[in-house]
Image (cartoon, rainbow, N blue to C red; front, top):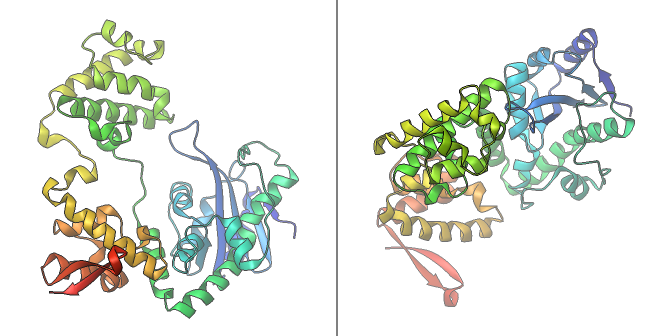
Length: 380
């Protein structure tokens, strides 16, 4: 079926009218983020029973799609995390309801598959391979580009049917829907400037005043990039940032000698701004540091987290689930430290949260069984 091409406000209005009462619809986006701080939306693909449409956000403001997103319909998408962030920025909101086919697949023993592999496995349809590096901002799009984009949503509703059938057969539909709701309501934002230094290579090995310099210079870079809408590396390269952190310059001449610092950093007051950030970092108090999540774990409790993670991995294998679906290491760390954790409620609490609570409370113990091949939890 030829996808509808939407590049005018009137035809977009017709699409919104068509979709707002649909009980479910498929949605995907194409975007580029290589040359801007905020990803730039290049295409929105929508599907419904019997139709597919491609919305050109370079020609028409996609904001009216908010009416569809705000409606009662279920948005079906695959690996929707980035799509949700894009929609919130372009349309001012995300969907009222969400079913993520990649998330659902992880609850029926399929791991976290790509869309093409999931469609082929569940529906027996092989999607045409497209150019992974397609420039979606160039117009006009070629016919094969449009077909490739349309295929990303054309099978989503059939996937929803197939996955729900498997979820119902295993009694896990509520688990998958709960996880999709958690993903839908999760706060999506660029990292806070004060935590941008966590992405510096070797950040976790930094100690002393280097951490403060890393925090302040990386935060300055992040804020400047957001203001200019350019990638942070365009403001200050990763190589230059690492060099500044490891040997903080105190003058423009010293800054100029740092590997990776180019002439753009030394003009129009930028060099002085970098040096001011370095100075703030050198004076930063330990209690003002924003530390990466694992660094907030009491070192004395780290072995306990490792033991719990081993049992969790085995439990996930028994349930044919990805361990990350059950809990992350950060979830375990919060549980061990008595902090709020998603393991304390919902289906996770029953499967792993309550057993782990009993273990931490001394009500149960772990023992090796089957010659060390299995970790067994036993009542004390």
